[in-house]
Amino acid sequence: MGFFTDAYDLFCVSLVTKLLGRIYYHHDGALKPGTLPPNVAAAVNGVAFCGTLAGQLFFGWLGDKLGRKKVYGMTLMLMVICSVASGLSFSDKPASVMATLCFFRFWLGFGIGGDYPLSATIMSEYANKKTRGAFIAAVFAMQGFGILAGGMVAIIVAAAFKSAYPTPAYQDAPILSTPPQADFVWRIIVMFGALPAALTYYWRMKMPETARYTALVAKNAKQAASDMSKVLQVEIESESNTIIANNNSTTTTDFGLFSKKFLHRHGLHLLGTTSTWFLLDIAFYSQNLFQKDIFTGIGWIPAPKTMNALEEVYKIARAQTLIALCSTVPGYWFTVFFIDKIGRFAIQLMGFFFMTVFMFALAIPYDHWTHKENRIGFVIMYSLTFFFANFGPNATTFVVPAEIFPARLRSTCHGISAAAGKAGAMIGAFGFLYASQPKDPTKRDAGYPAGIGIRNSLIVLGCINALGVVFTFLVPESKGRSLEEMSKENEDDDDSNEVEMKGNEFRTVPV
Image 1 (cartoon, one colour):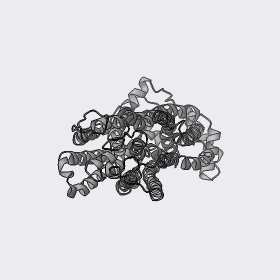
Image 2 (cartoon, rainbow, N blue to C red; image 1 turned 45 degrees about the horizontal axis):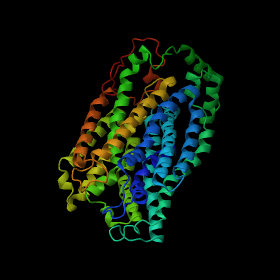
Image 3 (cartoon, rainbow, N blue to C red; image 1 turned 135 degrees about the horizontal axis):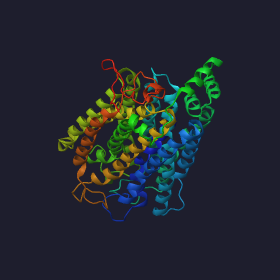
Image 4 (cartoon, rainbow, N blue to C red; image 1 turned 90 degrees about the horizontal axis):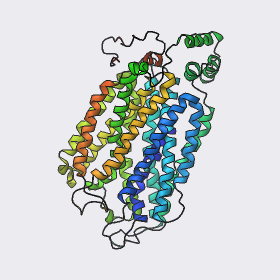
């Protein structure tokens, strides 16, 4: 449920940004409804990613220092508190409301950031090598249900308020089109994310520390055996303790993150995981956060002035829910079913390749897709980019860093990789907001400078996906191999860095 909450909290704000503009930035006599000013829109959409990046680095490091379990509860409580606080404001003035929202969304993102390295690391250290990929991918796949839940909650809340407080369209009565009760709509949607997080807290606190951390990092073989007994519900004999202790005594790979030994063994691997996650998130978060603008651009969502405030929330949520239901969620679960059969490398390469193909197929004949009779084709093609993002690099970039690094650095390296991804998400959130603005001033949102337009923005995203194909070749295949085999934690010979492969079963870059 952690990643369910993470996705809900990160993406629900995209459902209410148009509503925030109508409520707090309405101008009398304007031909179009109010919109968030460029700097405010960028902050509201992107501030959580800034917090997430910081949280991934901090909690990733802390998880290797204090243990996975101790830090896991901290992140969840931070998410609960800040989800509720995000819907509160100190006054009804726009500046105060936006400042409060952004402040608490930063710390909400900080807590979410900790969930990335800790959830992946905990699951990788609990799972066996045959089904490890599916288990880690299943944790991440809950993101799809979180995105879906965000849309469904927004649909239910908007429909309820629309039924209770019917209002005319903006073009008929600008002021009356946004009822005062609409201010409760965005707050309910944003604050709802605290509920699943709170329900998860008890079970996180009951979870024992992973045996791999206890044995390999904390060097406590007896406690590791005790924790394994709880998880497996069998009595671990003292002989197993001896095996663990012997494993500890023969491990000589106590090198640090900034050592030459780490650079020699895992330098290219870390470059591969950070670069692919960075490139993926530029495209993925641009598509997710601003799909409402793309759908409005092609006419699938009506022009804002033809709707009232609550109807606009409803139609944006309905469109995003449809995309999540038909492509995002299935893509995640295709990865879960196939990752241990065809491998991480093949799925990631295939995903980046088809994301590139479909992005160019949308961008190059963009004018063709804007015609009314072709809009359904655009939506199908656009959905396929989401499908192959999730049955592709969006899942594998999360899985692989949890498998290929040593236990004492696993959470830290996953946090670094994830933080690189969130740096890409920030570029996507801030950059696409400006870049997608059309050159025609009559079609631009108020206050924005001329951009390169949606068509050229999609071409740029296609090129970014193509770069992802290239950098995927730096990422090793971990299918069917133990964590110790991948990280070489049990190897004493520094020169044994080449991994012998039989046929094409495993693939890696020698480092």
